[in-house]
Image (cartoon, rainbow over all chains, first blue to last red; front, side, top):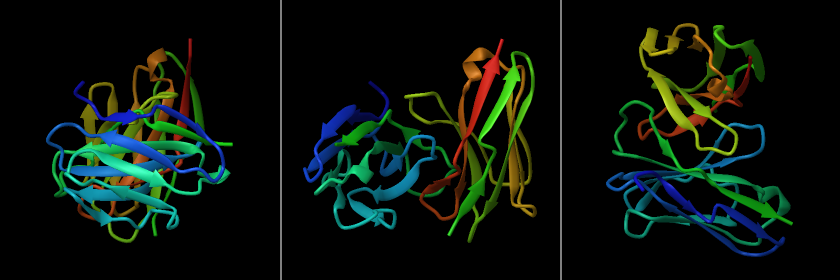
Length: 116
Length: 110
């Protein structure tokens, strides 16, 4: 497909477990973003990549959260020692260039994480 | 930091016009974007304003006043499929990092 792909679409885990969420951006898009959305809220910024490097990780809530993008394409969001408060939809978005061009991000449908 | 205010919910009938206001407080400002999100779906881009004035895209229009830190999204000729949540978002730095408002849920009734 041509859009942003996220897997898994749903993940149920137990408190304390480790979770990985994957994002496959649109081919050729150099910028990649992770957001978190709780029910009834707007997306909340977590981290932004330009190519392979994290350009801005100011939204990561604590050191249990980590994200990588080793080859400048697919990205993985990793959450250690999950807590019930981590339950949310994790959205990935990409954009075709890293310079500012007009606010359009292309979002995937998200990975819904439920921590029991 | 950044904060954005928008109404939580709006209800209207098919064929009507709805205006969703967004006020923002930011340190720095590049532009204001609007996104639509259906339940369980991905946010999708609707419009972007960097300069004052009205941008029209089909049935949807967006307005920005930088001096008032205010914008709105206008939905015309409402259709049932327009029932969704609408988010305003500000860009405050290069790199297209967006800060979103809490969203306005629009319910269109027959």
